[in-house]
Image 1 (cartoon, rainbow, N blue to C red):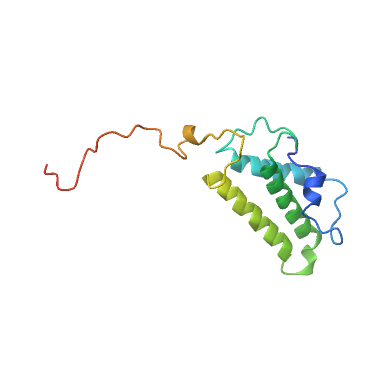
Image 2 (cartoon, rainbow, N blue to C red):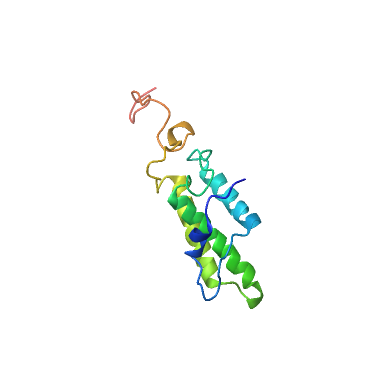
Length: 137
């Protein structure tokens, strides 16, 4: 699987004094990419997103946030109760993902699958009501 974000996307979320990203950890980056694509696939066709340049910027942002959150957790896991910044990054990325999947946030210039998967608009035509209040059978 290809990776949908690059080192610069991830570095934007890392504090250079605590975590320097010289190169992406391929296994972690692939795992994050697969997880985000799998979640977004219900609303968008991800087949054309084969590298960072073809992946929408919001999706790259979400992937980079999750990647850096996992790196912080792994790097500072021995410090105790968890990393507040990592938790915040991960929760923010999850909120963005949930809003994308539910249709609250829409990717501009990317066709949605909402009408074909049963999400979004109904796939039936509204007709006359079959039953009304006060109707006697």
